[in-house]
Image 1 (cartoon, helix red, strand yellow):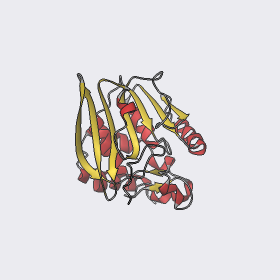
Image 2: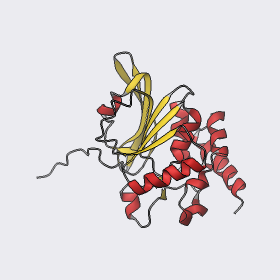
Image 3: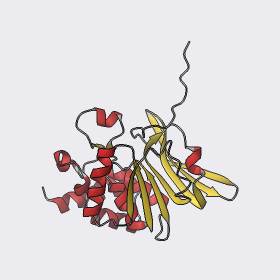
Length: 224
C-alpha cells in the first residue's frame, strides 16, 4: 500500500467533503501518522472511512473500543478550535490517536481510558509519536472525581452518551467547550456546549453514530 497516497485520499475524499476545511486540521491529519495508532491486524484499514476495532471480535464495538472514522475526528477538531494555551480533557483514549491530534493543538491533554490494556497501548503509541504533553490515566470519566485536575478549556467525549454529562460541564472554564456525540441509534447528534457567562450555549451541527462510552447513564426504559 502506498501510505502517503492513502493518507492524501483520506483527506481529499473523506474529510474535505465533510466540510472540514480548516487548514490547521488538514495539516494535522497529514503529519500525525494515523497508521501508527491502528492495531497491527487492521493496519490496512487505517485510512478507510470506518470504525476500527481496537480489540479482536465483535465485543470491541459493543464496548466502544474503536477508533472513530477519520472524518468524525476531524470534524470534532474543527468545531472545537483548540488553541495552544488550552488545557484539554478527553474521555475515551482508545488507541491514543485523538489525544495525539489534540496534543498538537493544546498546551496539555489529560486523557482517560477505562481499559488498562488499551491505556498501556495508547501510552506506547503516544510516546512513539512524541506526544510529550499528553497524559493517559486509567479511569472512568463517568464516575471519577476530576475536580482536582480541572478546570478545562476543552472536553472531548470520544464516543457517544445518552445525554451531556452535567458533572463534566461543571469542569469547564468560562468560554470552555465540551463536544460529544449525543443520543440513541439510529440518529445521534454531534453536540457542542460552550460555557457562556452564567449558562451554556448548545449547538448540534451534524449527525453521526458512535459506540457508547462505558459507565455513562442510559435513559430509563418504559415497560408495562
